[in-house]
Amino acid sequence: MTLKIYGIKNCDTMKKTFNFLEEKGIGYEFIDYKKQAPDAGLLVRFASKVGFEALVNKKGTTYRKLTDEEKSLLEKESDALALLGSKSSMIKRPIVEFPNGDLILGFEPEAILKKI
Image (tube, rainbow, N blue to C red):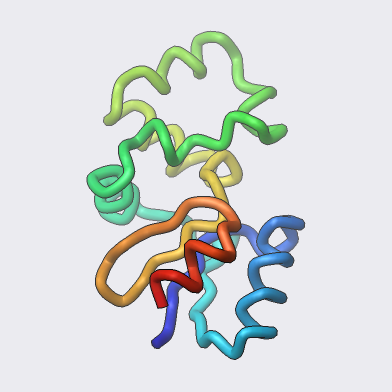
């Protein structure tokens, strides 16, 4: 089973995820938002599974630097996904995608093992 892992390479949570997967011998393909920005289709697909609100990392620096006007865009799905597409650092990470299309947001080792 090969997972797809979406995120940003230098993020500490991503590093924990990579280490965990490698220690468990779990194969994965990494999609780095900095090298391959998420397109609208991908974000819509993710949002259809977990809700667009769940995709927003409200604990990160990128979110905290948003203006009030930009934060108001996060109330409507189409605007929120457009903003996430342009500010991919604001997407919760990692997003772990299983071959069947199921997603796990964030580093959840037990949940990953349970789904494998």
